[in-house]
Length: 227
Image (cartoon, rainbow, N blue to C red):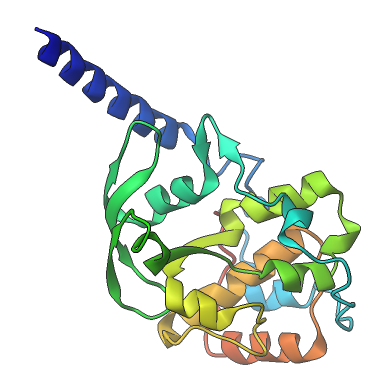
């Protein structure tokens, strides 16, 4: 009888975790960078023209703590696990909303990665800030309030689950210094960076803008993503 009660509790708890994940509306105003209507045909190239071009500001006083330090939580689930749940297939979660396992079609390399939570395995799949936080800091984020910077660092528009090694190679790079090895993803990657920079009023350097345009010239119809 006790075993049955425990089993029932586990099933209920897992159901609650999935309910929390599914209740997060990535299209809500909290996450939406811009409301593109069905008839809005403005392309990423056209939005690129809206970004201010300036030099890179000093990195002075930058730290991860300027963006809140750790991940934020929504309804008891932290942002890392929310993004893993969004981007992985065949996801298994525990009672605390931790993603235990799943399969990632890595956008940066094109590889299929099996994710398993653990001290030696979790880092194989990392959550990348599409606009690196150091880059954001030097291109306008230091002028934002702390609350706004925390929002930026936890915004699903800004986050992707990716191959850990590729994320480390990217480091603090912008489009002028790093692009995904998976060339088929570059248009979407650059358009996502533009979307983040528009939402948080960040600027681009001239070399970064040129690199973005070079990518988008190959896909002139590319639209901005909305989550």
